[in-house]
Every structure is written in structure tokens, then in C-alpha cells.
Image 1: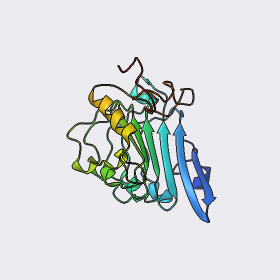
Image 2 (image 1 turned 60 degrees about the horizontal axis):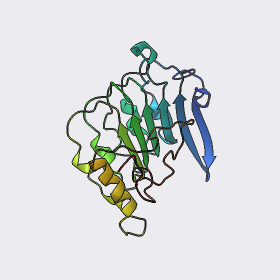
Image 3 (image 1 turned 90 degrees about the vertical axis):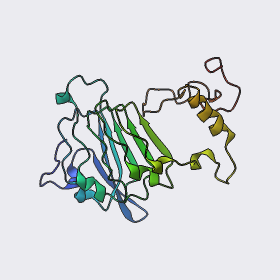
Image 4 (image 1 turned 120 degrees about the horizontal axis):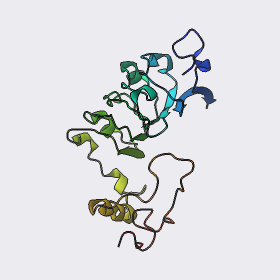
Length: 212
């Protein structure tokens, strides 16, 4: 990406945006379909106090490593303690290091379709009480799921009552059914191809013929 780790102001680096929100600067890094290759530079300390969103989304099905981002998140990424949203999709990155312990505001994580991403799942991702979305799929992680990931808070409504829609949906997964909605950000995909009715969509009605 142009400008990275040069003498140019970080506001001029490609994919970086800084804006003022409630009197505070918030920064985002969005590296989408840029044909990046090589490894991420270890210079995230430059954004430690402002970075709230970090997204890498490469074109799917890159055939060679020379056309894909590789390596892993560098150690300085752990200094981005204001991070709220993380997306890494369709890369050849090799692992997901456990760098998220000091990120209490991290609520939205999407790590999908990284064919070379192996090793253990980060334990610290399971300690986020306010986590709203955690998508981990089509990678090559190994080992057991950390005990810290054993949360049931998503099974309840905001006022503490069990959410029957979610229980029905998760039972579908136990029976081998997949989600009937896109779990990877895609501007061309329909957000509700099953009309929000089926148990593997939003489960607001009877199950369709796909699930019976």
C-alpha cells in the first residue's frame, strides 16, 4: 500500500482514514482488493491511540502467494487498544496471534477464508464480554477451542430472557445445517436470501424445505 512506513504523514497512507467523533480522533485502516503481497509492517504503534477498525479483504482465490498478503499480525498490533472491529478475509496469512488481551472494546471480528491460517485460536478473543459478532470460518486452525470461548450470552435477549430464535438456529448447526445468509461481507450478496423465515436465517417462521 502506498505511503506505508515512509516519512509521509500517516493520514496520507493508502487505506487510512482519520475522523473526529465526539471530540476524539478515530482511525480506520481498510485494505480492500488492493492486490497486496508480502507481510504487514510492524509499525502499528503509530495508530495505537486512534485505531478503531482494521479490515483486510483481498480478492478470493488468489492462486499464488506472490499475489496474497502473507505472514501474520505483527507484535505492535497489540498496542491498538481502542480497536472495535477486525476483519481478515481471503489472505494467505499464516496465523492469528493472541494479541487482543488489551482491547476491551473489540466487538466485531470476522476471520474467514484464509486458507493458510493455522495454529491455535487466540484465547483472548473469548474474553470479550461485549462481543457482538465473531465469525471464524474456512481457515485451517488447529488444536482445541479455548475454554474462554465458552460463552452463552448470545443465547439471551437484552432483557435477560432466553432467545428461542437463537436456540432453534444453533440446534440447526448441531444437525449439520449451515447459515442461510452471507457470513462474509459482500456488497452483491442478498442479506436475507431465505426471507428471514427459515431456522438457519432469522427463524421468524416455520422451517422451509431446505431444512426439513
